[in-house]
Length: 499
Image 1 (tube, rainbow, N blue to C red):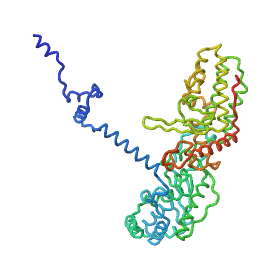
Image 2 (cartoon, one colour; image 1 turned 120 degrees about the vertical axis):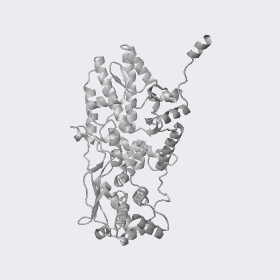
Image 3 (cartoon, helix red, strand yellow; image 1 turned 45 degrees about the vertical axis):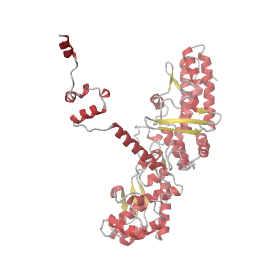
Image 4 (cartoon, rainbow, N blue to C red; image 1 turned 180 degrees about the vertical axis):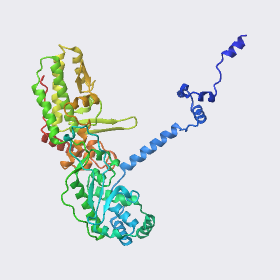
């Protein structure tokens, strides 16, 4: 009898088909790989080997990183001047649809063969082409458009005069056949992409900013810094005409009509105007000076305004991305050597950090803020021990440096900072990066140094990586330029009134 009851009490063997009836009841974490695969097979589900999936993800990530860091100026796959000369002479002689598309690809730096609708070409009265730059346009709330520089949405550039002959071109559209002819003449195999990449290669070698190259070649999606940058159409036109002049010179052909001064800007549509940035900081200073500090509420408001001033000044001086707990704790600052450690782009798979040189005005503001915190700790040690304890944790590197007063002192979170900014300066939370990327170039800093400062990958990969050509001296030069920008905006070092 006991034997029978023991048999009845044994757990039934559950078949995979029984599992299949209700997958929501299955705890996959308790099943081994073989059982999981069997269940998925019965469900006609796509089976993904987790090990294989991780391998493929890692492989794609590695390949993408290598593409970025090893896109070197001297790459042997790039075309030489002599090869480009032969290409131009050949397309002029053939005068076919295929040669027309290949010529447009070379002179525009865009793959027109595979994407003929990317540009609009005029071959009659004005020999020119127009295109829409591939730049992310941010949504702007109604009523605050005046805070930002207006942008245009189209660029028009001249083409050499020989393009007029393509009005009577043969409709033969066999690009492969044309490439075969060129391959025999050049004694090498070339592709359409090599032809379209020649403009980027030439401009990189002649010191042009990678963001401007990407705007002209309509490949802004390949470089995140392009979406932060605003430049004049005239600036891009001058860069392009220098490139066209080079092509015409090596091929002994006549250039197109030189464009006169062009007006308007191309790029990011959320670059704040300097006068509004100055007004924002002036407004903070004015409110700080007018405040009475007779009770806890007034001290709280004073603290929040002073913290806002210090945080936004540091964001301008470092290009910090919008993150919770900006600038973390005091361990991230080295005020003796004017250095700061920035880690504003961490994720599960990537950690992007950098070291920057702080301009003197930022160092002085941090020093003034620390003196204020010491006074705040002393004041509240007699009034509110919890607040005094929190400030003490800040000063001893046990808590984030920047807090806002609510009912208590709480570390700054990005959403709270954004909410407080709406009533003071209703711009995007990363407004500082759009503003400074543009300003640093306006003040004559080279694009590679700006990418290094912002934490963007340029030629050779990340700023001070093993394949990069940047140096720490460039960061010192950037700090000097940032000092000039902040000074020209009229931003001041503000001390807390408790000092």
